[in-house]
Length: 202
Image 1: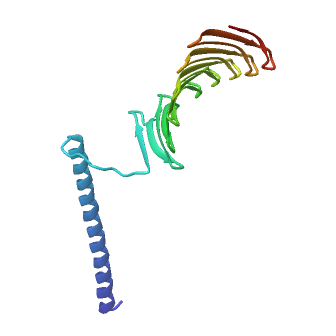
Image 2: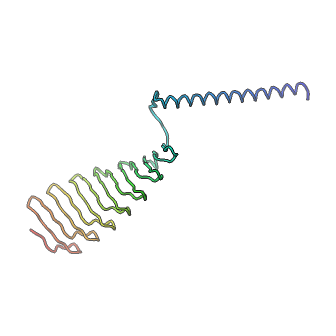
Image 3: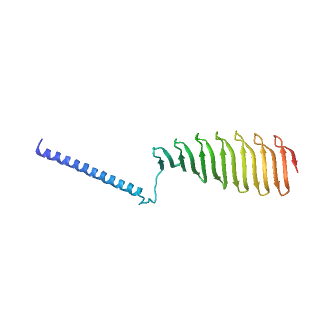
């Protein structure tokens, strides 16, 4: 190897060492900067005005996901999970419909609170996820519906401008008895399975 070749080799090696040294210094500065920012944030001396991300995950001391905030197909959703990692609360907005769901330990929806077209609705479900109670407040007044184990509406109670009303339905959803109180007084109507009136008073 000639002297010129050795000099070229040493120069190349020197440049490589310089690049490595600059990289190490850069990493060190970055580590110090990040550590300083974290320490400042932990001390509460700095408040971030805006944080932009596509997904936010909060974990507990064991590293388990407990809170998740994300947008799924243009629907913002907030999930709160229990210690077993199962979703227990979900808060979402579907277009113009806000919705809050509460789940049991088996993942079944037990409580739903929503607003649909200016009608506020609260639904309670059983352990099988079947809707059993629905309470709503619409423009014409509040209403309450009770459902059987198959999800069929069996009892309806409402209050409208004319007065309160009670409706009893069969398993097929047909009205069989109705009780109302309006300006003319109370009224009771009984119907057969085809919806034909059997008896009414007054």
